[in-house]
Every structure is written in C-alpha cells, then in structure tokens.
Length: 412
Image (cartoon, rainbow, N blue to C red; front, side):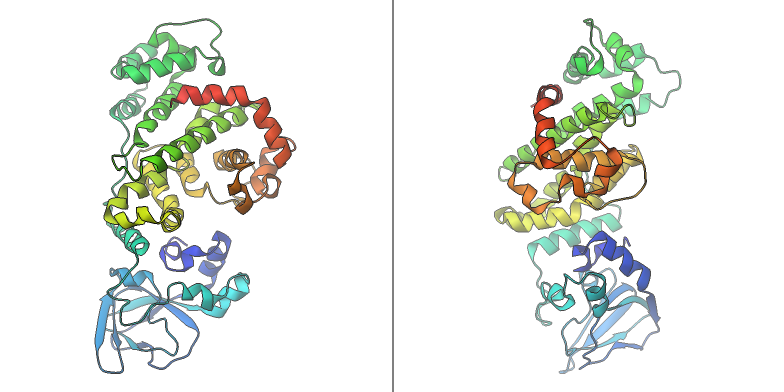
C-alpha cells in the first residue's frame, strides 16, 4: 500500500481503491535478458519498476536504461500504446504488473486511460523533461527514502521538556525551571492555567503553581502547542500569506477540537485534542519548506495545492514521528483529509480533527467539494448530536466565545 501511494498516477486514487489494488496485484520477478514488454504491444497494462535495472530499446536502436532509484521509476514504464520500446531486464528485477481494466472495475468514475493521460508525455522527452510539481515530489521522495528529509524541528524548549518528561521523579518545580528559559512560553502557560478552559477559578502567578494546576502531561502538551507557532513562519515573501492562512486555519481547527473534546464526557483529552488540531496540517509546512527547489510553483496556486495534497500526509506523519510524539498524532497528520476513514468503532483524534475541519469549512466555498458532516463515519462515532451543517453553524455560534478564547490562548 505504501509503495502504491508513491506511484504516478495511482497516488491520485482513493485510499480504498489503492487498498483493493494492493490486495490484487502481485510482484513479478524477471531474470536478466527477460522481456517485460515487447515493442508494438497493445496490452492494456501498467508496469512499475520496484527493484533492479531495465533497458528501453526504441525502433531506431536507441537505448535508454534506468534503475529503480531513477525518478522515472515513479511512473509507468513505456506507457504509450502501441508500445514504442522493447523493455527488458538488464539485472534481476521485480516489478508491478497492473491490468488497467481493474482500475475501471474498482472505481468506475475513473477511466484508466484518461487517468494515465494526465501523465502522458512524449517518450522522447519523458527522461529529460518533468513538471515542477513532479520534480518537487521526486526530490522529497528521494530524501524520504534516503532518510534525509528536511523537516521542521521543534523549538528547544519543547525538546527540553520532552527529555524532562522521561524522568519518573519530575515535579512541577523542576519543570518550571525548564520552561522559564522561554519567557514567552512561560507567559502563555500562566495565562492558560488562569483561564476558565483549564479550571482557573483563583488567580495564580507562579509557573510551578500553573504546572501543578494543569498537571505534567497537559503542561507538556500545551508547551508543544505554543512552540509549534514558530514553525508557521517563512522568510519567503511569496509564501508568507499562505503560511499565515495555514496558521489561522490550524489554530481554528485546534480551538474547535478542544471545545468539541470537552463535550465528549472524557472520551478524548481536550489538551491533546488541541495539539492534534494544530498538527493536522504540519506536512504542509514541510512541503512549503521545499518550495525553494521549485520556486516556479509559487506562481501557480493550483499546481502548488495539488503537490501539497499529494505530499502532506506522508510528510506530516514523518515529522511527528521524528519529534517522537505519540503515534496518535502521526495518524492525525496522515489521515486528516481521509473523510471516509472508518478504522475502529471508538472515536479517536483523527475523527475529532475530521469533524472539526468540516465545522470550520461550513459556510465557505470549500464545503462544496467536501462531504456533509453527517455523511462521514467520524460523525457516527463521535455522536455529538445532530451534526448537520445547520447544527454546526448553531454549535459554532453557541461555542463562539469558547473557541475565540482558545484561539487567543494560542496567539496570533
């Protein structure tokens, strides 16, 4: 499944369809000299090189060869029909052989030929020419496979607290000393402890008392939440507005997650829900960080949006795991646009983030391309009442002050 999600254009298919394909296709192995696809073949199949090296021999005798590490391995081999090349193994190889008609059977709304046509280029140029979004994706996948991804790093205060949390003898006073090294984070934590959202009925003015009121776990979660804002900044003038919009959206989703979690009778932790909402689009931050490799993408919003949609899930999960945060948050970063997700019978933080996003999109043009709140599995698991679009507007209006309070807590 993970391998299929890397390949063009299979990555454009629904997750359920990819899962079905993964269960039906087999990996084929071939010895050196064996022909994978003959010149002139009209067989309606797609081949993807997984391991080894192959040669493509044209009618004029010209030979192109590449191995599985070449960016072209992300695309179907010799896709034109009739086939313009004789494709042969020059080393032991393994490859996927996919019947294109199977794609039509599994997901009729896609036509395999039209799906492939979006990647149809002349065979002469496909080895040398590539669109900016494909170059960006290939660069990121190469770095991912080599474990050399350029990922955002957590601010030092969050890292120090993460290390401190591993000490079984950690107390509020010790943690207060760590946090006090960052006055801005310390001030936000004090404000949180004194807010009604976290039980602040009587005023406190020391960091240790704030930590005692919040508890070590909630303090840790909030410090990460406060620190994450620093990652939504960029030195690129062309991307500043996009990054600001991304932060506003993430902050809004986080606030709605927190408020909704308080209405779930303890099933989900509100502070953790806040962090889940903030991190659900963290993969976008990484994609925007790579834009310097393909600056022309900033000139075409649709192409950039498509690249983000394809890359953000895998990058988001990689970032959260690199930070050694709970796996639940990695799943949020990976699955926060999987509206059909139905992984278990009990609600989790992915379900909460999905619902929170749809709440935030109600009344906007984005809602036209998204499912109704009551049409996704997360709705039935959370059982927050009549979560129809009309009810959502009412809920947001009723909880508006609570949401604004949390947004203010997170900062501008």
